[in-house]
Length: 446
Image (cartoon, rainbow, N blue to C red):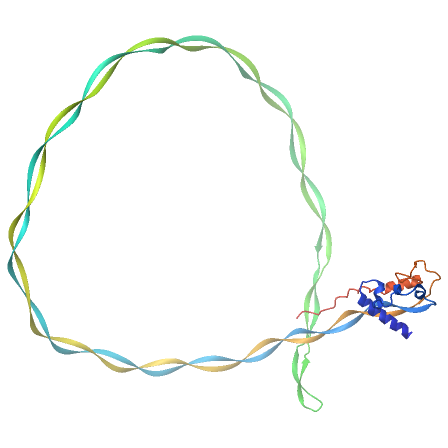
């Protein structure tokens, strides 16, 4: 039995290594039946082998999940308070004073005199002289004459004739015809529909709230107080729960359905009948008659005649003549005269002036403020986990008397002398696909 378990373990290891290759790859090719003679391939007696079976089992696994929990603690905060303090300070006042000071200034005195200056200027003198100039001009001479022109003209001659004109007119004829008219009338139709209505009521339901977990001083076995987390007693509240009660009822519903009504009504129909009318219309006919006309056309001829003319052209000449002139030029002289003056000079006088200043002095004030904090509390959560169990099932294999698949020269596929049960055992050596695991419970998100 121990030998059978060892063979099964070796078969499982080699099936994982071989993967999806043929069965001949087992034992790394060393136990291939195609490498031995036909007489050695055939088993001589029945033997017992083990077949591997896989079974999926489930077990309960407990995970630790951290859940948030809120608690209130007192935190000491410090505020800054300002007090008013009176303080005397001094500031510097600057005042302006004046003193008299004597100084000398030089005042300018201006005197004006004249002097005579002679100078020469060039004065222009203009003279006009006339020159004779001869030139030729062309004078137009106009001559008038008469020329006869003959031409053919077309004179219109108008005659009045009568012509018959036939036209078709449409004469109106009125007839009375019975015509069927259709119109739509809305008829009321009453139907019933089923409506469901919730006629429930609110019911009070008690809800228990566990107390908070707070640190508490608890004496241990030696009598020494230690801090332990203990849960305080909870409290019960009532909340409103809606209990539904569905009631069905019939509601009448009135709608208007269209209905077509036919009615025969007399209608006057007006139609037009064609009629031929003959009228005599006077027509004026215009024809052209040829006629010869003689016209006298005056002709004017212009020719140019040359003439010689003489004219006098004025020529203007300019020459410069020297002339002596004199002018009086004013001359200004300045002399300085010293004078004594008095002025007021400002200067600064400094003095100290007291004044009161209020300043704010800061001091710290302590106070307790409740603060809500969050901590993580461990919680045990159960979930199901799948796993596989392999077990060995014994199986007896017996040889057959002949091999129908063997040929000359040995068994190529290694199936000589093996029974049908052994063929199924060789198929069991292939790896079986693993089952899909069941998703585990992850716990609430923190």
